[in-house]
Image 1: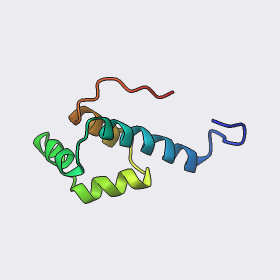
Image 2: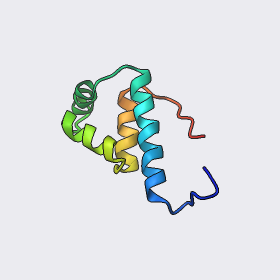
Image 3: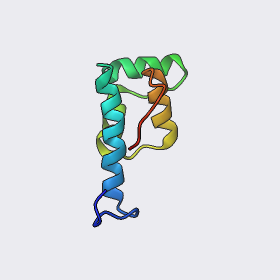
Length: 80
């Protein structure tokens, strides 16, 4: 975080969480279709397109993020 970036800079934080989630998905080489299927198996219904849109915008809640992290098998997340 630079001096010019403040805690209130929504664009920074949207990009940050988007990058965190995308990186974890990429590390595991899992498609949005597979994430959708894994979420559905847990009773969470999100289409692959909806997952893609949420992640691309960076406008998803903590619940969605944790749900995705769990179904892709992410047990630890480094937020540094």
